Image (cartoon, rainbow, N blue to C red; front, side, top):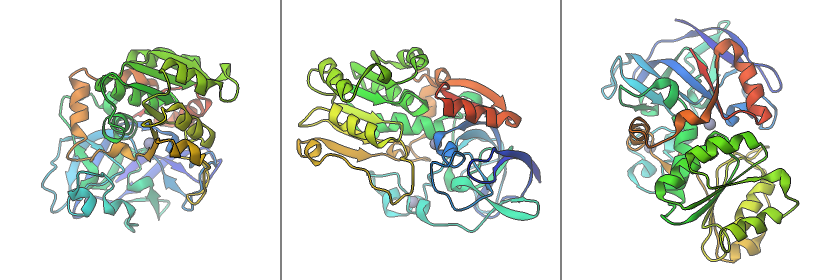
Length: 365
Ligand SMILES: [Zn+2]
Ligand SMILES: [Zn+2]
């Protein structure tokens, strides 16, 4: 079938919106009509030159929500008409991480795959992380697809498959924020707001947000922020001292949601010696082999530093509960979406995201 999609043709090139061909679902695959898709910084990094990527042209997009329109042979868990969210992380149910309650990092995520359902001008093209949600329809393997409740508003929960699961999961599953604790969040974009949502749900009583854009304060306060610090008002490590003062000695939990090495160090130093936990969420720029300095003394002082990928939440068996929470009014997802565009204006959306002025930007089909 012919579908409209946004195609990345290389670094520092605007996305091209054009018709592409989409192959129907084969065994184990499903065809999903995407209703809304979120723009994420991880997509942005493959457009603005900040992350190495060898394979263009490419259909970006890894956040979205839609309806199953056709299922391939052997698919029994999903049926036509189901409301779904496709996620970057599969859950095969068979590999050691899928069978363990310690991680969501399914072994299949790291296995390269040859199948390319999209083609453009007669040549097969890659869909980012096997998804490619900046297209009207996608064909994905069923173990990438979370079935969600039918009454979930797809135009609101469309950001939960990356920003939502990542932020809420980092607070609840990775850091395991406790009631009465103090939290500091560096970067109040889509991920940061969801970390705040998760921290509030966990009962954190001090939630400090750091950003350079004061427009981010109001939505963050709605999510549960108690203190806003404008990074522009501080010199050097003064912000670390201020966080220590606000938390009586350092935050119990700190989260780096930007992907900046200097902020990662500040996040670690802002946490309390002895037990403070820092979760690194933001994807750092550059190559996958690049290194990042963190002062050994700050770790030797009994702090914990960890990473989190999609919030350490399993996409099929655990993630749908988060959508239930949204429908039940426990989350503030709609508050984090700041702009909506048709796919023809997707480049405008990325410009806004890059400017730091936007929360989450959404494309509606
Ligand atoms: Zn993302
Ligand atoms: Zn698995």
